[in-house]
Length: 174
Image 1 (cartoon, rainbow, N blue to C red):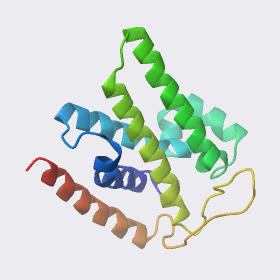
Image 2 (image 1 turned 180 degrees about the vertical axis):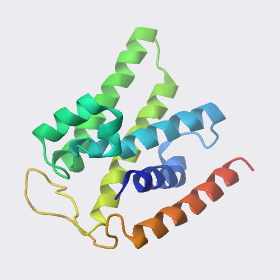
Image 3 (image 1 turned 90 degrees about the horizontal axis):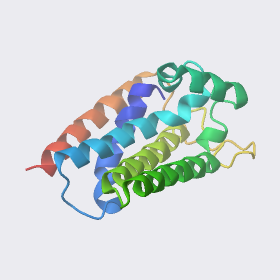
């Protein structure tokens, strides 16, 4: 799927799933924005393994390096990739907390969004005809081919997600 669709998948499903992964049901607008920021970043990170992806263009040095050492929809689109980013995210949260001298809930919320967005990206790519190597380094491709990347179904899916996302966000602050 394309970057715009990944962002919509990450934000929409993240917003829908948020109450089940964040302990409080009420979020301040700042907390909500931080979580959504994590969802957006997380939904783009797996494509650092593709040299022409939005993520690789946004962080060109990292994108060039990552795409030169791993194939697209390989390591970063696998359970190992999720674990790798989880460790990175947890480490970031711990480091910030250690520097500040106490837990920093806003960093933990960003990390939650990051991991959710990352996982949702992989699930979205599993819905394409290309699928993903979910259990990398095993070569078996996991796919549920509902959408062709760049096709009309992807565009319709993205617009549907936008409508659901707007509805959910509005309903959170009624």
